[in-house]
Length: 188
Ligand code: GDP
Ligand code: MG
Image (cartoon, rainbow, N blue to C red; front, side, top):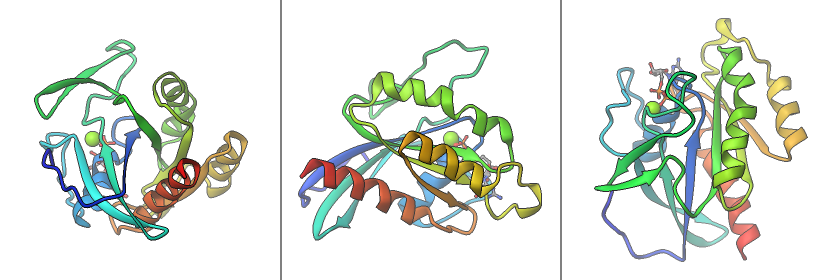
């Protein structure tokens, strides 16, 4: 994924952000290969993937950065650095135009932490395009965050909202389509 395909009209960097365990790497994996692996771990060796996506007739090179298991936690301080393609980068890459902000619909605290991630984003992302993603909708009996709660938060922040399952791939492509379309429309 450090290789460069050159046949595209625009390159948009996006970041996946949210608490540990919400499914960011699984969503990245679905976006990349349309494969869900139950033992997909943060040891996954790639911290971003690129994929050409058609948006309104244009080839958009979507570069999606994962935070790769280096999410901040209460104990390890406010900031984290990690290595990507041999270069040390900030947790949120420079030039990111949008974010996929993920919480886990089966863990209420991951939803409550969305506001904290928002602050991180405001400090580091060049534009405010956000799609709020409630992941793990396949775990119907374990749900702690309703669709209405997610939609209301997104609406109050002016974000798009979608619920996904990285397990059965529901809405994963849709989340990226929404975000890339938003970025593209603001860009042209
Ligand atoms: P990350 O820490 O945010 O990158 O989360 P991971 O992608 O590593 O996922 C954490 C755990 O949740 C793993 O055991 C995944 O298999 C599981 N997981 C991720 N997405 C889903 C989902 O949509 N449904 C279910 N049932 N499990 C998921
Ligand atoms: Mg991960």
